[in-house]
Length: 614
Picture (cartoon, rainbow, N blue to C red):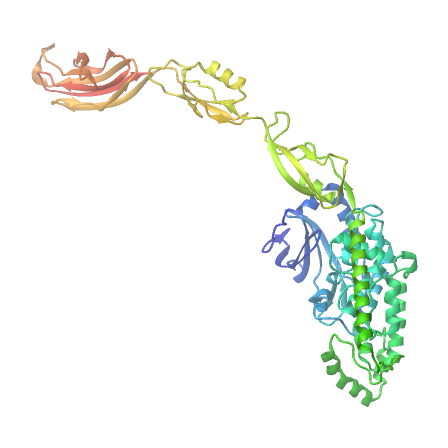
């Protein structure tokens, strides 16, 4: 599955704080959280994003969680709330402070009394659910929690049924190491399937390992279908062995009918073990610690024990705790039915050992051959044509994504599936890869040259090439209005079909101010000017009082010369006369110029505004 996001440090719906990631399963991640509204620690399970993308699965999820929230049993983790946040759907349950049975079993097998008590408590919880028509379908030590007081809590209850919906066959649900044979065949699980799961968990508590382990999921499923579990140690009490053997029967009809029947059988086995071990045994005390008050030994009966007996039990308690997870030794042992043989034949022993080794090797070869010849589970390859969420569709079908290549396709959007191998509808081995060909969209096109073209003609040329256009109107001295003066990207560039080319188009010409000057007296040179095809000078000039008499003026004003920058040649010369906002127009070809102002014969003050027409 694509990796789910880590939500630590966030608050769902502004209420449930997510503090620490404490577990992860098929459907979601479990966080240690805090309910701000009620001020209590909770466990919050957030569904992984790819499950929430399926509306039908989401509807089943909400329906099943509402049903499970109605289950109330001391040995079942209670669901408090369900919601839909920005991060996806989630539900909130009680937080069990302690450890899982899986963590406990890492230290080895448990004492038979304690294993029987835990299994019986699991069966009582399952029986409560079976009476309401609910099957767990994923019994395993990781889902069994033990709080700090040693009480049993069954978690993730009913979650596995959400995979295919109730009553849907052909979908394999559960963990292969703890899966009932009918689940391995894809059949709908029943309460007897949960009985098998408890049987595997009880076997692991007694042996320190599950009955079948190692190999692929297919190999584990085949062993559950065909092989009997290895015999338990001779130190396990016979009544408990019989319960395990019946719970692990291959056919559902040969097991206990439901978890309630198995709980009663375990109670009888505990009673038989108590009689064999005597009162005050470790098995009895371990079972009592996990039962509801009064279930095994009544409070009044405990109070009525002689003080010496209670003191002896208290003295034995540390001893029982130190023995922990190994079976306690009773004071008296039953002798074996046969004693060890005193005489032996070394040569005969070697021959028997060689024969036994040959038999074991033959059995191993036959077993490997059977696994190799066993038909692998095959699934139907879904049709992925045109799909963008192909990874999710493959995961739901039990397949994985293989090699991916891309090719251009005008008819299919980029990122969608064009072709697949194997073809849709074919049967493929579960877990195998499907090779995909994805569309890279239409092939790229070459940007045509458009400088100097009319705006409309340039847009039509881009449309014919499969490109779009964006117009930017810019000043362009010497260019006719509507002419393309620049383009981006440049001509010849390769761009994806549908890309946009920016066209800079010349504005309609008008008078624009280039610079302004003001002064009195000496010569002035204006900054460099870049002109279109004409220059207009708007000026004001005033002579001193000495150069005019009455209404007559004999004053000589300054002269303006327009000089080419490169050649130094004067292309125009104009003498300015007195007046306010006078205008002089100078025709000149487009180019770069300098404006020189030479003083006249009489003192004057002036101001100039230089304008260009483009």
